[in-house]
Every structure is written in C-alpha cells, then in structure tokens.
Image (cartoon, rainbow, N blue to C red):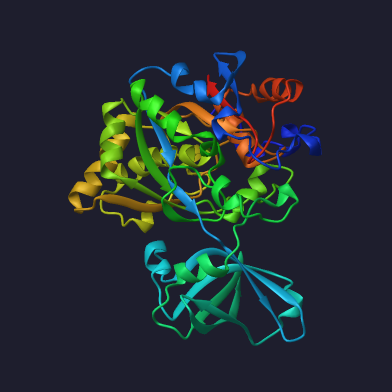
Length: 406
C-alpha cells in the first residue's frame, strides 16, 4: 500500500457545493442528462444517451438491480404527535424476500423520528387494503447500536408486509433535496431495471438509463449483468472523524448470481461498474475469493468483507482466480446465488482489482463515495469536480453523471 489509508484526513476531500447546484429533480427524459467523460486524464462533455458509443465493444457492464422500498411509515399518537419509523434492514425474518411476504408480524431495525414523543407503548394506525380495514401496530422493543428494534403486527393474514408498504409507506428521497417526497419520485427515483426490493436509497448512477439506452448498449455489443446490493441509510452517513480510521462503514447485503461470475471470468475478471454500489459488490468478490483460498469451508455469513480487510491482506490471486474460487464455492454447495454482505471502504491507497471503468454521479463533499472516486482516478478527483462545477453540471442523486476511465 503506497499510503496509510487509515490516516487520510477527510477535510482534504472537501469542496464548495452551492445549494443551487444540487439537482432537486431529474432532467426529462432521464438519458438527456450531461455526461462528463474522464479518459486517461482528458476531460470532455457528452450527453448520457451517447454512452453506448463511448464504450469498447464486447465489454461487460455490471449494474445494481435493487429497488427502493417505501421505507418511511408515519404514525400519529393520541396526543397528536407524529412519529416517523424509517425501515433500515429486516431482522425477523432476516431474508428480504421472506420479509416482504410476511403476514401478521415482522421485525425491523429502524430509525425513529420524534423519538422523545414515543417513550413507551405501541403506535397504532388503521388501514384499508382491497376494501378490508385492519390495524397496524408498531412496538419498540430495544435500542440497538444503529437504531431500534421494532416489531410490526397486523390483524389481517391476507395482507403481506409488502402490500402494507405500498399502501402507507413513503419513498425516502435523500435528505439533502430539502423537499417532501412527491408522487413523481415513485418513478424517477427508481432505475428502469430495478426489480429486487430492499434499498432505502437509489443506486443513482443507474437513474440515467432508459430502455432506449439499454437497447443501444445491446446493439453496440456491450454485455450486461446484474448484481444486487441493498443500499442502506448509511450511504448518507457523514464522516465525522478527522481521519477515516475513525469512521465505521455501514454493512450492506449483496447478491451475485452464478451466471454473473461465469461472465466475469469470460471477461478476464474485468467490468464496467454502474455506480458505487456495483463497485463495492464487484471489488468485494475479490476478497471473498481470498477468504475461500484460505478456508473453502466458510459459511456465507463468514464471507462478509470487513471494512479494512483489503488493506490488511496480501493480494495473492488474480481477479479471475479469485472469482473462480467464489464460483467453485457455489458449485460445491449447490448454490445458484451468493448471498453475503460487505463493509468495504474504498479510499486512496486501494488498488482496484475488477472494476476498470466507472459510471457515477457527483458526490457530496467529505463523503466516503468521494474517497472511492478519488481512489479510482488516482487522486485526480478535484480536477474532475472543478470542471463539473465550472461547466454547469448538476450534482448528487438527481444530478448529472460521469464516465471515468483512468
């Protein structure tokens, strides 16, 4: 490692982002957003719909197919106080798919808004789905390190928790938009290829894609594969420590199919990542391969990639060799899909193994996502961001994007 990554000062990754440069709404159509192209140090400007012409024929593109859930549920107490319960991750059942199929009862790790007004007891809300009224209750059981354990119960066994969220949940748009969620966000804050429910924030680099762009990628000979990383609220967690050693990365759950691993091997372990969530998933695969080299008998839970693992392990495998280890693990255990989690932090000093090109939006100052970009462009992030600020690019979730080719 060329530098001591743990002692990076987050203040060195600050820049002035005027409020008016934060996009409150997306452009229409979404593929007409601006695209900054950084290619071997040279910077040019395009429209996003031109992306298929900018990529090498035969390359492999990997994107995150997670779907944002309507994770905010509002309750009103008899006193009139409004309490917001923000779903973070499922606890019982812990599997996302089983959670959304739950009937009568489920438990989540949640954040609670206006917590001081909810000292004890349960919250109650009367609902009606498909003409049938019933009662939803929320019981706060215990405080956990990153939120509260809350059990939801409802007295209609014909209704799933997914249907409850669709009926009363609110889509959690990013706090920095400083506006209320609108009906249009239900469509614009989802990628056109979203399908697996579980995120509380969108993988925003994917918001620029349209079906026309996807078809043009196919026509241009760009192969496409999906992974799933459910984006947690921790993606907005500011770095408060002076050095990033003091920042605890959030855990996110990843899912990679056998076919995707096979395709990565065919492409020499190299890929174009759509968004930082795809980056974290792909790069985590390398370190999962290293774990399996040391111990092929690990459980999926034990394959979890810890925050500092990449900086503490010697890279003794090629990307292809690492992915083969993961694929062999699936074959040996008769699994079609890898289900595990990652806490990986990617910052200057990190050496990318699998991702060779990156499509990403413009990120908040002093954020872990900006550190990830800086690591990818070998520290040249400020020149990229200065160009974007000087050329009227729009920033953050609903903003413009960049194609980065170091």
